[in-house]
Amino acid sequence: MKLQIVSGLSGSGKTIALQVLEDLDYYCIDNLPLELLPELVDKSLKDRLYLDKVAIGIDARTLGSDFLDFSNIIQKIKNNGIDCNVLFLDAQNDILLKRFSETRRKHPLTNEQTSLEEAIKRERLVLEVICNESNQQINTTQTNVHQLRDKIKHLLILNNQPVMALQFLSFGFKHGLPGDMDMMFDMRCLPNPHWEIELRPLTGKDQAVADFLNQHDSFNKMFEDIKQYVEQWLPCFEDNNRNYLTIAIGCTGGQHRSVYMVEKLTQYFKQQRDSVISRHKELN
Image (cartoon, rainbow, N blue to C red; front, top):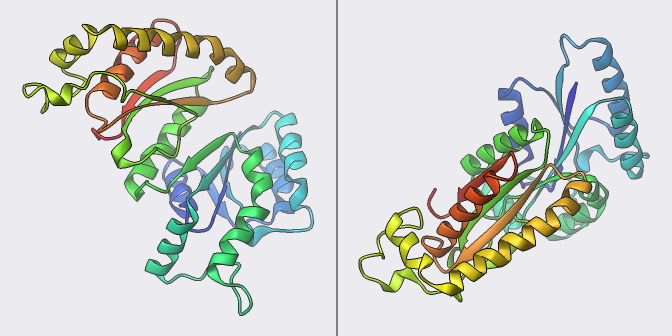
C-alpha cells in the first residue's frame, strides 16, 4: 500500500496536489481527522483491492487532541510496512495574502478576532510538526498551477526509485531563487557568453556556448569543485532517508552558464549512479 500525506499552508496548493493524485488513481480524502488515519490504514491493509493507493489531506482544519502525536502516528504506520510519504506545501506569507485577496476565500483560522495575516502566522506555527516530519517539500511562491502539477508528478516518480534521485536545476538570479532547492551554487563570477554577440541568442545546450565556457579555466575549476563537493556529501543525504536532492545552479539570466553547468554535471553523475535528472527553470 502507498500512503501519501498532503499538508501545508492554506493557499499553497493542497487542493491542486490532491487533484493530481486523484487523476493518478489515488483514493483521496481531504480534511481527514488525524485520529482516523490509523483506522483507515488498517482497513486498507485488509482491502487492498480498493485502497491500494491512498492520499490524505491534513491541514489546520483537522487539528485534534492527538495532533502533536503526528510523528508517532506516521512512525507506527511505517512500522506496519506501509510506503508512506509526507508532502508539505509552503509559500511566502505575502504571496498567501495575495492569493486569498484575489480569490476572496476565507482562511480556515480567521474569525472576528483573528485577521488573515494573523491566521497565516498561527497556521504556520501549528503545522510546524508536520513540516518537520515531511520528506517532500514544495515551495509554491513562484509556481503556477501547471508547474505545481508537473512537480507533484515528478515527486511520485521519484518515490518509486530504489535510491535517492539527484536533480540539477538551472535558474536565473534576476528571475528569483527557486523555492525547491536543497543547495545552490552561483555561476555569476564566470565569463558570460551573453556579452558575445553571436552567443547571446543561444543557450547552454548549444555546442558553441559549451566551447566558449570550456576554454576558460575558471569554468572547469568550478565544475571540478562542485562535482567533488556533491560526491563527498551525497552519502550523508542518502543516509538521512531522502527521496531526492535538488542542486540549483544559478547565473544572471539562467540561459548560458548555469544551463551548461547543469548539463555537464548531469552527464557526469549519470555515469556514476541511477536516477539523475536535469531541469532548466528559465528555458521551460
